[in-house]
Structure formats: C-alpha cells, structure tokens
Image 1 (cartoon, rainbow, N blue to C red):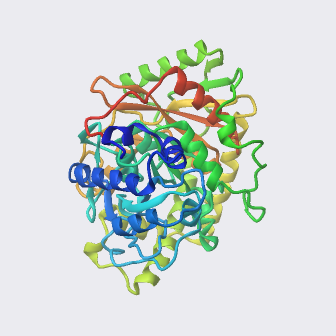
Image 2 (image 1 turned 120 degrees about the vertical axis):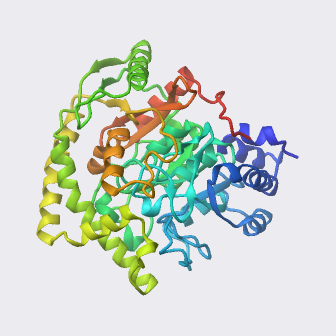
Length: 477
C-alpha cells in the first residue's frame, strides 16, 4: 500500500515505474489522488469537476502500455474535450456544455497510460493570467493561499504544486503554461507551435498562438509526456524539422556551452520589481558558473508595434471562437453570463474587419522575423516570467476591476511571455528562485524555433544545479 508521503514525493515517471514493478497499482494511485483532492480542494479550489468512479473503473481494467501507465492526471477545463465530461471554460454561459467524444490530445494522453480523474479551474475562456472567474471562483496558490496560482492553467498548476497529481494538462496562448508554473514553482514548457495537435478541425486555433502541454514538478515528466504526445504533422501550416532524438534522451545529455542572452527589458521600459531583478541576475551568474557564455542583451523588438498588430488578430479569433460556442449553446449570452472583460473582448473582436485582421497578421509576421532573427546569434534568451512577485488574490480579478484596469495590471505583472506565442518558439519556466515571502520566482528560457531539445538539456542541467524538488509549499501531500 502506497503511503501518503510516498505518493506525493514521486513524479509521474517514478510512479509508472512502481506500477510496472508491481510495487503499487493504478487503483492505489487513483485513491491517493482522490484523497488529496478531497483534503486540499476546499482550500485551493483547483479541481472543478471530478470523475472518481470512472477513474477507478479505468484503473481496474487494462491500460495502454504507455510511459505513464496508471498515473493519475487532471485536465484543464478549457479547449480539451473529454467524452461525457462538462466543458465550462470557466464561464456561466458554457456551464451546460458536455462533450460527446474525446479530443485528439485527450486520446493521446490516454494512450500514454494516464488516468484522468477530473478537470481543473480556469479563468473565463482563459483570457487572464489569474484564475478567478465568477463562475468557478478563485483558485489559490499552495505556497500561500492568499496569492494567485496564475492563469489560465491555474487549477492545473495548483493541483500539481500541492502534490495532488504529478503533472496535469495545461495550455498557453499568451503565457498560460509559463505563468502558473512560475507562480506555483513548477516546470512549465510552452512547446513549439503545432508540436501538440488537439482537434483536427480546430488545429489552427488562434493562428498557432495557443499550444497544449503539461505543468509538472520535474523536467523528465515534461520530456516523457512530450515524447508520448508530440507530433510532426506534414499537413501543418507551420512546418518544422523532426526532433533528432527522444526528449528523454536529450535530458541525459550535456547542453554544451550555450550562448545565452538575458534581459529584464519590458514594453513599458519601466524597471521591474527589485526582488525579481535580483533573482534574474543570480540566475545569470549560475549559468556563467556552469560554463555558458552569458551576456546582458535585450531582444530589440518593437513591443508596442507587436502588441498593436496582435490586437485585431486576437480579437477576430476570439469573436470567431465565441461564435462557435454561441452555435453550440444555441443563443447569445445573457448579460450576467459573461464577465465584463469577456464582454469587452467579444464586442471589440466583432468590430474587427477582415482588412484589419489581415493587416495585423501581416504585421505580426514581419515583426516575428525580428524575434526569430535574434536567435541566429543566441541559443537561448533568459528573462523572468513575471515582472513582480506573485500577486494576491483580487489584484488582477476580472470580476472586481474594469477591463482597462485589468489589462493595465496584467501588462505590469506579465510583460514577458506573449512574444514567443506570436513567434511560435518553445519557451520554458523553471522554478529557480524564491522571494522574501517564500513564493516562487520563475525564470523563462526561450530557444530557437522547434528547438525544445536545447531547453530540455539546459533545464535538466539546472535541475541538478538548483534542485527544487526539496521545496514544499504550505499546502502539500
């Protein structure tokens, strides 16, 4: 029988190995996860739909012989259909939607051997970097429940950080994997554009800005899951070269001497929080000690032009996505069924003309070339994930503040992640630092297009040099 502490102290790879050796069973692991949800969820509000009986039935039956056979898993309640499960997307308007079949990535997760046992909290349609929707309520950070868990994959990050499951599904359109990973002290890789495909009829959602993967406590869980789910689809409109080797092999290899640029530059030009700046500089020093060539140098991109170009593209995509949802529901939303920020985004998106969207997309393509060209001379770019310490619950709430104020505050707190959604490059948050209050500070590393391998090798090196596994949050195990 697996003990409470043993379960939470293992990552997914280790739990699957115990199952393979007969030292535990999938049912025991599911029971461990269920017990933790029942104990911690009243504090965290990380899990918003449970399917415990279904998970136990699946654990008793034959499971696919994947790398995570028998490991409990959670799925974000946004953009990820699971047959027979609700998909509210954090919104009152979508609260009655129930999917009739698995999405493509859900099926890939099942083939990896994981056992899904519920869905995790998300902000309304994933449009904020905090998980505080009117429909599902705020999700709290296990390191300090008065603080946010990030967004939009905040429920997944909170559950993984608390030891409920070793990893969980997450998605990232402007930082929604990396931000919660940074807030909750986890590994959060935004994979390359189109590395993980979801639904065949929806694979170009948001023109490749949005990608799916996991948040995890260890680098190897992220690597093993991407080996299991990653695809190289010749029909992709965003082609990239095939990986040279499995990522589980890459994490055993030295990254060699890398050329790493680092900067805390932001679109506003204002200095970031001193604690975050100091953490960034310490990280640069660690990289130098590891033998890398490390130079302070910004990306040199026109942030204002980049965000101006992104506006009509994202607006049109959001309006189109909401249009599809309105077709599913069969009516327009009632006034109280969408939050003010969502209403503002929908109304703004509906005003975007085809000409505006096309010009924005062309401008983005031109500006993205500048971002991508930077990596002709540099292997990796380092910055923080957040420009401030992890905020308290309420500071970014789309329920408590007007849309313009929410967006202003988000620009202050989350200035670093969006450019790499636009360019499509892989980018990872690693939990290398903590602040004076004991809250995590995530550092973000970005590599060349389709070069997750370099990030995995560097992340594995840093995991050994700055081991974070021994740090435990207030709400744990």
